Length: 99
Image (cartoon, rainbow, N blue to C red; front, side, top):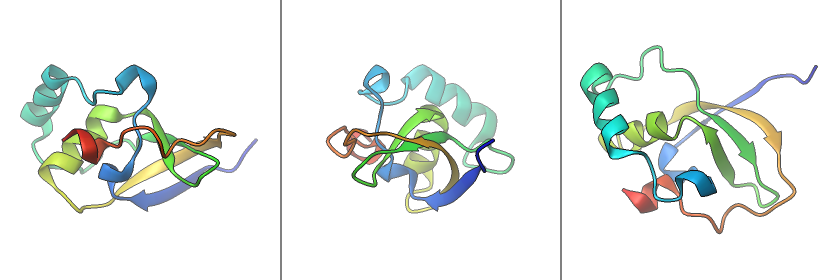
């Protein structure tokens, strides 16, 4: 079993997957904000994969990461790196570019 790897990163730097290339769903983002506000207490870490260029592509947690990037700019969050990709992901839009 692979050892779990966690890092701290500014969520605005995370790259968006093709299925969420336009960013977080605005309705879901508002619903999360209404429920959690700007708190990150107890927030499950988003799951990311490391691209061959060292950038991180988010696989689970786009809305969570976007909420932090939008309402707590510059605050780092914990993400779990769940694997490595052979592809470059730095050419994909970041959360910060979509805010």
